Image (cartoon, rainbow, N blue to C red; front, side, top):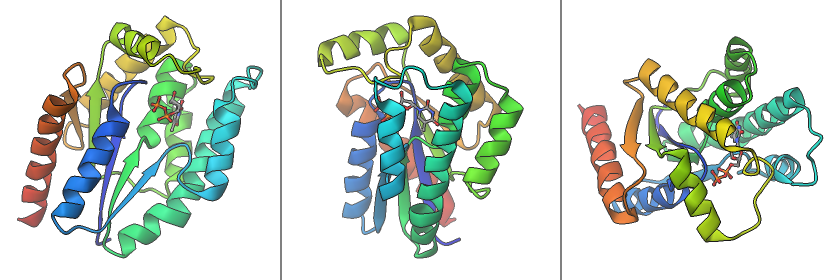
Length: 211
Ligand code: TYD
């Protein structure tokens, strides 16, 4: 595989979407061909699944159904968008990927982690990111940022504090178990300071990749 696959992870309002966009313009300025996608979504059918997943009307969704819909959206995005772009030598930047399922459905919801890993393996066709940036943030700050935004909360954002707490801790555990791939960055800083930290991690990644 010729390209590079970079993912962003973290709890809601950690700033990953902003940082992913900044990274994409930075890489483009440096001459890379870049595809930016998000999960769930990033592809026509996957975007339709996203609407089902996030609609606050779907409060009766079962946990297994939720898990499988995320996986289904991931399979669609991976096969139709990510793998072809990597084959063409592009850098693919993805806002959330398989780690989200393990953190939210595994640690957050309490579903069996081994099962989720198996499903991730299927929906990603075994694709693992070359680099994952985890923006870590205390749940308290995440909730405060959400309040400030004052937009309507989606179905997952409506979950209570403990769910997000378990999800955050899950992310930190996943990062500890994948030290080479996952780089932890403090998400409490302002946009520019966080970006400097992201840039350092990415520069070092490309420096090593070139060697
Ligand atoms: P996202 O659009 O990234 O929201 P935000 O920008 O607020 O982070 O993701 C939507 C929600 O979906 C988010 O609350 C996390 C959740 N999610 C899962 O629970 N499992 C998954 O596998 C993925 C990809 C997302």
